[in-house]
Image 1: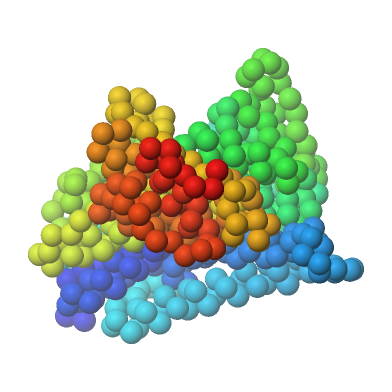
Image 2 (image 1 turned 90 degrees about the horizontal axis):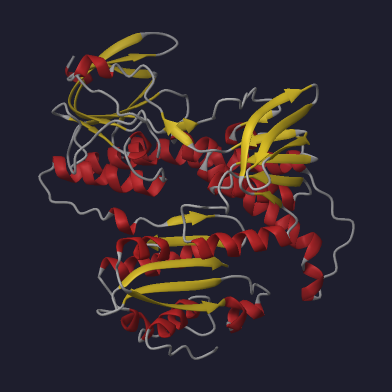
Length: 469
């Protein structure tokens, strides 16, 4: 039994789970991780972040080859899309990445169990696999079981024609017409990928703009760019039903502005209306944990549940459902258990939309600052005025900086344009150290580079001092 007794057991091997396991092992804890499926990495590595980015990258390369290379004096003829090979590459990337997680588990001497983990009591966990059921003992447990796609009433997901993001990453053909329900991150990323591969794409969104949770200017800029690429948007439309009719997907929605119903037909319908916590059959009732009204595991500021020794991180808890948020929480719990005093600022967790142009955001939006009554000033800089962007034929978008009106501390940074997913890290770092807009404006940025747009936006926020506009 001593071999099956651990200091920390993590249920779930997604980014939050496996990062937490590694940090626990680094800190000297005897650690085990439980994964329901045969491969490690959870949703993110297997059917989420990693495969979607692989498909996005491939689709962008194809689109550039067909549509943009001629602008650079590169004439390409008879371009053919091998979609099966493209999807095979996506699968290969997933396999390599998941294998990398297994390597890290072995390297850090973390015991891995495959099967469904559930609580018998707070110190005993049952693991049921296809072959057997075993029990292990633990002093502490971290719930990191992630989330799964959700759907609203009337959305009949058959996983053939009416699909989720999981099936969208494994299609055997490029859709002729893909209907996307939901103008959020997942819907726009996958919708834009298939649009670039030649599909007609229609996005049906309940709100009056896309990526409604981000700064409104970012949504307007992104919608304009994707519309230019040929994506059709039906905003302010409430979906009544989505179902399969023979060989078609049929969506009926209500145009809330015109107060009338519309019918949209396509060969596939992607339901991308969010995700919900995955807590099925965890045995939480055996350890006195009650889920909240949205099915999440309640935690306090230290990510402790109501039961001593049991923690929860990532998508099963309150807050944004982002892999890097789960990673930081997993590290936080490991270091807390080791007696350290870790730090986690939820206001500085960046959000990214990996369309092209990319969208990235950190801190408070303009709408949030106005609502809270905080006096602020703003500066923005368009990529079309940036030499590096023009040299690369990437002039869409802008960077907006929001700073406190009196102290000049940066309160929010919002970007839409090229390489924003990488550039947002500079803003996060600056804000973590409470930098002012002038601090960033006085920092030397390489020329020519995309990050100069961030410096210029900070200059614009500092007494309207931008140089190149």
